[in-house]
Length: 213
Image (cartoon, helix red, strand yellow):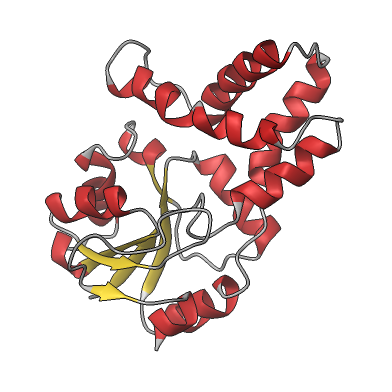
């Protein structure tokens, strides 16, 4: 194993706690964060299915936000909607993440393999202190996970064979797709995501620090 690539939303950063805080700034109820996240996969599917040409995650997040605010009967001004979309660039890391990534970086290449686009991933890394060696993932492949192109394009960009790269996620479906694409797999549970492995992943670790060890 020469590189580890990481899911971002939920595995590396606490999207839910962060977005509850961000939406509360505009007087929105706590349920807004969960309702918005429920729009995530349906909006990704519009691109995966070919019904919508490639657009980055900021565009899809904005579409989802507008749907949710309409359902809530909230006429939040345009400038606040733009601010909320950019809040996905400022999410807090789980407590074990920065130390664990720093340890892993000493011996392996580390990078995100996220559905976030490059600008979002760079801004998130700066905000959360994530010490990536590279930014990989959806925009590189012009596709969204679990499309195998995303995992394979990330390995190809590093010049590595697929079985030299390990996908790390708190989502069993993410790991199933990565394994099917030829990558190795590591499961790290998170309280807002999957809490138990559903397959015999190559590695199961309770935290990033344990993953490094």
